[in-house]
Length: 341
Image 1 (tube, helix red, strand yellow):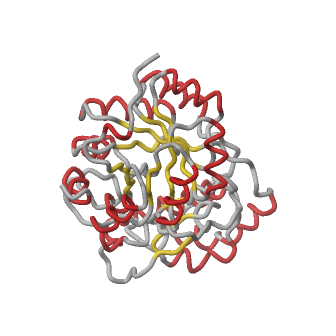
Image 2 (tube, rainbow, N blue to C red):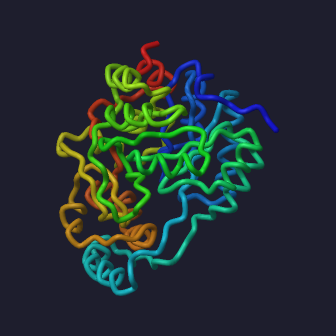
């Protein structure tokens, strides 16, 4: 049995959100940890070997605590016909960008192999999104000295996660950028304010609660702490950080006055996610389908081409509602500023 890290051990109780698809780099995780917080790597959408390399790279850059997020495998929802209709609706888009649409397939994101990686390399924390880990996984990770977190959007989801044995809960509010962490992939995301969710979870459960979503200012961080959060998790606030792997198109759009709002959409991936509203969403949200990651596989070539062509109207730019608060600079400085250090 290994000694287990606790969120209360953090010098600065700010956690860097895991942001799959590029923004979360080893350098970003290390910079957050070097600022006294908890840096996170996004294990979703990477291979098990890539995840192992990222953990080792982050360890070389920081002696602080490290977290890793994993996507819980999703059930196959969309039928072949539904995916075919979605692809047909995107055909003109694919021709515009000069690419072939991707082929959807069943995939578990190498979940079992990634569990092996984290048990072997032992980051201090492992969190789960899109569902709870199994009780057996929680026991295995706990025996390795790893703190387990589940991302939840409702008290009901928290009850499920708590029954599986997770050590702490991440309360994701409606203003969070990126994918909503709803356990039911076709359920409309809850709209309850973050402060209310945090307060309810603190009242119901005897475990640490992390507040996430829309926390881009010191005042917002203090409000979440006043609601009872042990720590806060920030993502959008780090998108412009020097160490973030945010692609140039996304970086530019965050500061471009033509982008004035975020919306929750399934258009890019088949799962509800908050992004900057752009042309792709306006053109395709109406005929999007449920089905992650299959829908994401179909749109993947379009999104990659749009980034290559520096076109912000063809790619999903995951962003929280408070994106105007994001600023440039070192993630270490951003974390400390939000914490009021």
